[in-house]
Amino acid sequence: MSARESSHSFQAQLPASLTAEIVEKIAVLRLNRPHKRNALDDETVIGIDAFFSALPETVAAVLLAGEGEHFSAGLDLSELQERDISQGIEHSRLWHRAFEKIQFGRVPVVAVLHGAVVGGGLELAAAAHVRVAERSAYYALPEGSRGIYVGGGGSVRLPRLIGVARMMDMMLTGRTYSAEEGQAIGLTTYLVEPGRGLAKGLELAQRIAQNAPLTNFAVTQALPRIAEMAPSSGYAVEALMASIAQADPVAKGRLKDFLEKRGPKVARE
Ligand code: 1HE
Image (tube, rainbow, N blue to C red):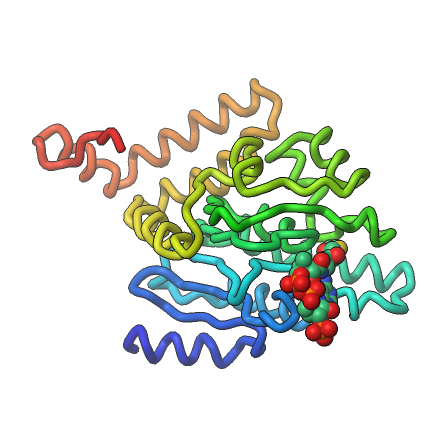
């Protein structure tokens, strides 16, 4: 199947609020509800789950971005009307399942952020592995002012990026961080000029796609779990992961290439 055909069959399973295309080994998923500022309704969250559940085997990395002026305005507030407690729990668990597929799916995910990255939009971005911000990006958790609470894994992922104190401040005071501030506090690791995010994200995704699959598995699956372990357990799992990775034929080939002067040197960027 050509890349174009597989893009089409891929898109057929998604709601209109999401567009997907495959660019060589990279699947590009865009939030495509710009008239609602890419607010995340149930259909979109279920679509995100479906997208990450059905990634073609040829895909080695995902690029996640938003159409229009904003990455995402977060939860679609129009759907939040009359849920009771158990429906509220189910709704949050729907988001958890979808975003787990991003964080612990088969391939690394690069998110490109611009404009509003707020509430559930920030929770979505936090589930990616690498975040690129355009200078237009800004971050907020307006849940506090709406009388609600984060429900898309924000309490778990955001403190690991920026610390409990900063997240408390954002939620209690409604504080907004600029793209530059977000970069300084660790929300993103790349900051680019407006309009340059997709190119930078694609460049990074293509670089990631060239890694040995086992390296990408180790980094996205083992590393965050080791970081949560007691150090004594972490050292043991790290030793196992390191020995598994180095025994892989891909690793053997790459080490040989370097030793025989064919492999790339580490370059100063
Ligand atoms: C929406 C939403 C939304 C826009 N749900 N419809 N998120 C928030 O509290 C953020 C709410 N949104 C905003 O603050 C602003 O819309 C933005 C700063 C993101 C963009 O402003 P702007 O001036 O470009 O757009 P707008 O005119 O405010 O919105 C355009 C339309 O999108 C308008 O609809 P229209 O039918 O009147 O045209 C808005 O109602 C609609 N819209 N944002 C529904 N969020 C798992 S728990 C997660 C909890 C949360 O995420 S809470 C945070 C929710």
